[in-house]
Length: 429
Ligand SMILES: Nc1nc2c(ncn2[C@@H]2O[C@H](COP(=O)(O)OP(=O)(O)OP(=O)(O)O)[C@@H](O)[C@H]2O)c(=O)[nH]1
Ligand SMILES: [Mg+2]
Image (cartoon, rainbow, N blue to C red; front, side, top):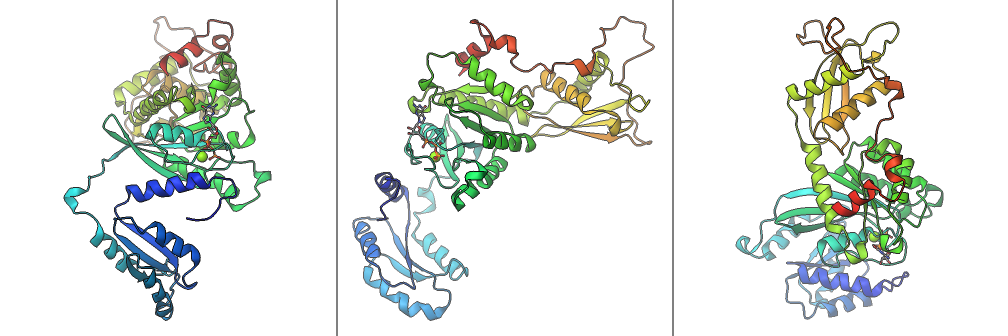
């Protein structure tokens, strides 16, 4: 309270403080126990004068009891029970918690929080509209939004409810190029964004269509891929691009992130709420896909067909064999294949299998993790391989190395006026 913000956000900060006081059950008035009463403390005390909620005055930095007598002068501010603590030394932590609990409303008056249905990480460069999007979802001004790049300085969990379900959207500080990392905030922004990605069920990667996709965007995308997180590319501020068709931008995103070809692209205008809830629905759908489990029978049917359509090529003069597959986990869907030697299946073939699983199992738009294991001698499992001896007519063999790895969207889809990709996104979103 009471500091004039260099970025001219003072009024916004004031509104946030008011909202916080308004929503709280108990207020902790934190002062520097060693510094003595400062004019700003008196100002804060003044602000709290008409607040009817319980207040605890927390004199921090009292690392030992020697500091307590000095801190006693905060009594004169007359705002709540005084307690001397040290956050650094963990001093009087339990006592403080007791004071808080004593002042909470009775259990019956407190709403039991619902379990969180989905955690969303909102990441991207500075000023792409991440906080605007979150305010839109939460239907209140939970985050400060401004045209000043770098407004959000840290990761913040914003909880909101919709259709009876609870969600958490993790807002993050916009990331910046490493070479321009001038301060701690900027240095930590990437580390914090990565942490948010790890904590999330689904990641929304925000972009401003007026800017070229940068190295940090790629770095973030790389991390999302590495972590096997379901994700959406969210192109925000589309109002500024209209009436331009979305295809060109879609094409640009696709060609920049070829290994994320299964990640849906959404075009939104957070400022006017356009497609914001559609993105939430899409994210829920992705979360469902990533949590799905398929039976071993179904999986092996798909695996058998994939091997029949395109047999794994010989390697070191040995023929790779895939005996059997099974899903061992969800979030991300994790599939283990038993083979006669994991080293015999090259990357191209592994990508072909993953692509086939994605197309034919309910994992259409989410990453799949695949592990190869060598079948042990005593494993009794059926061999899945093309039935060489079978005389029945087979589909023509496909040369795996030449497979285009059909993406959700092909270049042809994106060209021309009748763009199925574009209509798909605008229609659905
Ligand atoms: N035209 C337009 N402007 C938008 C839209 N969404 C956000 N903005 C504006 O973009 C600016 C940045 O918005 P923020 O929500 O603060 O962006 P942010 O990504 O949280 O930024 P940092 O916290 O700095 O990383 C603000 O001036 C917003 O009003 C949009 O859909 N259309
Ligand atoms: Mg922000």
